[in-house]
Image (cartoon, rainbow, N blue to C red; front, top):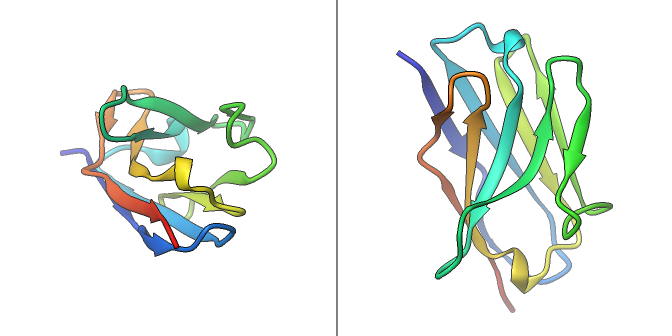
Length: 113
């Protein structure tokens, strides 16, 4: 059974940082491309960042230069380092196993003063 469990969300002031983690079980993690997505209230879910098995990365234009996706295959975990956070980054953040299409339950990120 595939499980993806996100953590690390919370309330942060504009300009602050957070690191999200997604622990994965039930798959051969190193064989899966992984993605971070987000969904703000009233908006569709959107891709934030993706990392391939070869560690190639791509980012949404809105987060380039501020967010960094990484993975640790030994720990079956994918990370999203978020710096210089803005109120527009407020959303529920989800990780996704791109190979099998499985999602985590999401973690709330709120950027507000």
